Length: 425
Image 1 (cartoon, helix red, strand yellow):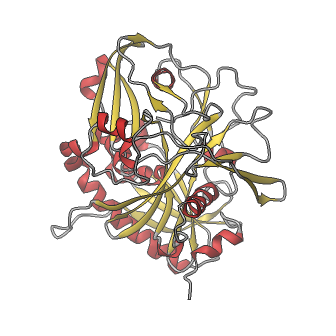
Image 2: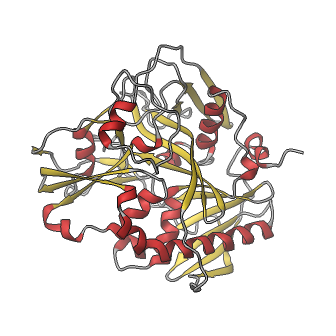
Image 3: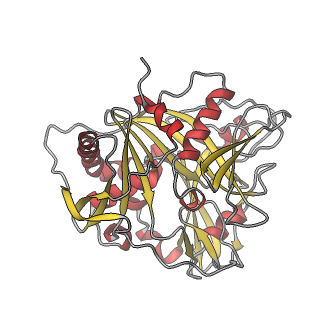
């Protein structure tokens, strides 16, 4: 689930959908097919998980179309826990929640930074390294910088299936940075969606979580981790629904691998409040008419304390789609999954699962993960071969991924951030 609730009174109707072929040459220059597996293919897992950044988008009280959107990234020893996910309140069931209404973000980063979707990711990572007094992240070492959403789309294409998401067309814009790093830019037909009036996911999040202190104006928390996936060094951004509630007293580690065996209660006791510290603000120009305001503040949340929230009706609980849900947890190494079970909005149970305990789901998705690694290899080779000035795009067409060139050579990052991918001599 997205962590931002719907707007109950949107200021304007949704704009028309964008054309998936917008800005592309008409000629398909290459085509990818779903790879086959060999008996020699090894098990694909994730290792060397490390938290490297996070931030919250801040609601603009004046206008959503403000040309200078703001994010807050976490810096230690501050009073406001901005840059933190909402905190799980562990409320006792039963309770009744109204159906979702209004509009919600499907891609908040694209809405706020359409010309530089990955810029907030890089800014957050750089700021966290400075705060922790660590060496800057070595961007040239990364094979892929991406949103989890792009990996999910590739997995759905690979895995097939007969649900709406599995068959949905998609687009991913690509760009080479440095010698080998592939920037995968999320592309959506629209940045906002309208709630159907029959779902309860956003209401469930709103009812069961509370903003961290100082985060009342937040409209979404995004986290960045790096890990090894089948030999590729990945930098992955994803939205976080919630975290285990803060309890003052015990000191939490700044980073923590999701492979920890700590229980939910132990994690709740681990998290701690932070001390007072003055926030700082900087402004980063993106385009002549648009800039990004960065405010420091917040607290670090261990990787094994973040939570994915999902809902399902009691009638559909036996058919809950773990084949769809498990990769969402796996690709972000989200340790905890809380499933609210309801009958038309009357919630009577919350089923809690830990990623490491979902061994059956892990086995089921393993063939698709092996194919994903093969697809990533093909994509990297293709992008590297076409070079720095090339702008390639993937379009799903049934069982194939078609490759097109974009007509514009515009970069997806400002030049001063793109050069960070060049290996230091």
